[in-house]
Image (tube, rainbow, N blue to C red; front, top):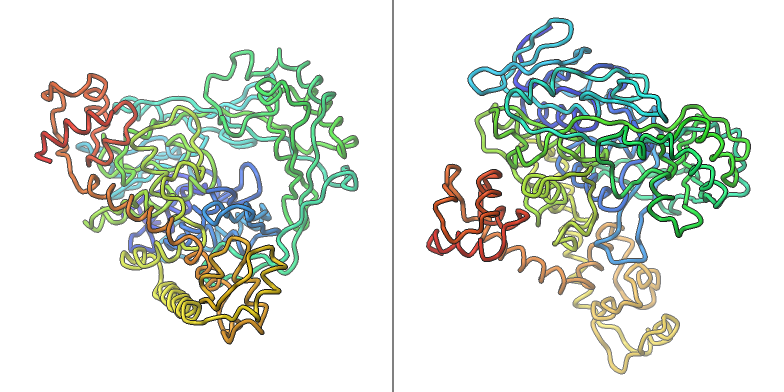
Amino acid sequence: MNKEYDVIVVGGGHAGCEATAAAANSGSSVLLITMNMGTIAQMSCNPAMGGVAKGQIVREIDAMGGYSGIVADKTAIQFRMLNLSKGPAMWSPRVQSDRWLFAQEWRLMLEQTQGVDFWQDTVNEVVVEKGKAVGVKTSMGLEFRSKAVVLTNGTFLNGLIHVGQKQFGGGRAGERNVTGLTEQMIDLGFDHGRMKTGTPPRVDARSLDFSVMEEQKGDEFPSTFSFSGTKPLKEQRSCHITYTNTTVHEILKEGLDRSPMFSGAIEGTGPRYCPSIEEKIDRFSDKDRHQIFVEPEGWNTVEVYVNGFSTSLPLDIQEKAIHQVKGFEKAKLFRPGYAIEYDYFPPTQLKHSLETKLIDSLYFAGQINGTTGYEEAGAQGLMAGLNASLKVQEKESLTLGRDQAYIGVLIDDLITKGTKEPYRMFTSRAEYRILLRQDNADIRLTELSNNIGLASHERLQKVIDKQAETDRLLKELNETSIEPEIVNDYLEEQKTAKLKQKVKLSSLIARPQLSLDGISKMEEFTPIKFNEYSKESIEQAEIKIKYQGYIDREKEMAEKQKRLEGLKIKEDFDYHKLQSLSSEAKEKLSKLRPATIGQAARISGVSPSDISVLLIHMGR
């Protein structure tokens, strides 16, 4: 067993796994230390990957050479593309996963990654010498040395589990918490806080009546997350939908006096966008029902995840209430829902590389930064592991811009704005979301990733071929004319204006009522051989034709913002000497130390007039 590595990653959750893969694949020797080798990449909450904005992140992780998309494809039991009725900026892939296969596949992929070692143990201390992280100490009394350390502790730092009035220490049901690390970080000068998340009960599918629920099938023609050539599903498992009712709500209210959420037992802030069922009935008292998604946990298991019924109410109330949900009258519980509180460190204490400002070569990723969600954690893990590896190799760190990736939006939001509640990604957080679509993540990021040694040359060649094929199709669409008498009957069927003279086919595709996929099936309309083009190229061509104006506008906005990003601010700049700055701006800028004017402009409390003062001072 080696005792010295380039990078040590602490924690084997989604952030830790992506950090390990990124650091190793970029050329570093890596030790992954996790409390339990049997729970590497465990889906602690819902058995699914992706969703609105989160699906875009998984595609970006994949384009950057990460593993989440590949693992999700290999272990999926259902695939759905969400929001297809909206514009392409909103399309978001999501898979229902086999929980056990997911963790198994992740472990196998890490074991097959050159340069990765494993050690099962608990890290209680980071070894810091002269302001730099140089290793870790474990509960077994071992010391491992390294040139960089990445902490991805999830919900384990002083984790406290709540079920009704019962409390017990734990980082996850059945697993102990981690003590000592928070206290050390506080001693080193870090601010910290408490957050809360929760999970619903799991039930036995054999005890449910699915015939009275709404069936939710996967897509008829499922796609994949990864751009690497993973195979789409041929068979899929259905999810189901049911609803709470007023009887359920009345029972839940009976237990509110014993709820840790309402008694004050829980001090941490929970996720506003994913409230517990007791919070829903309190916050939305005018609603007489709430949607419940009944999600299978795998191909063969009978365990079911009750999505939408997250709770920390006493067990007797959980059981009594769930039996009043339609289809759950005879439900048998496998395990109760619970809430968990844990320590986090406000992410404004980090650089954009996810390295801490206080301790050199120490990186934080995942829920330790105040985020929630596998996808957000995996994205941070990838960037932290990569940047730790780049630092070890004495190379410049990589920061993704807000116009390059949702990953860039995520990290920039955390660093410049911080978070006081578990942060999750939404499309609304991205000002350039028409640029940051799920379909073009490979085009946006693969070349960049290949240049730093993550994405393979085969991946890059796939992107080059895809772009060339799309350009060839666009050329044909722009050059091919279509006669009115050939297409007018079809246009009438589609309830769009008939042609009076021949037009280029691309101008027809621009109409909102028409789709390139629909026209491609009408071979008599055009000499273009659409069967020679991939589904991806057809999709790319249509998006470019229909949305080019929006795309160009966002690119122009991004270019203007980049001018501010290019204006560097000295790290030791004294903001207090600028009398015209507001007091709040002086305080925020002095504390957060933005690297550029662009970052300064995004800090809450820094006004446009404050930015003008900075620009004038810099001679701009």
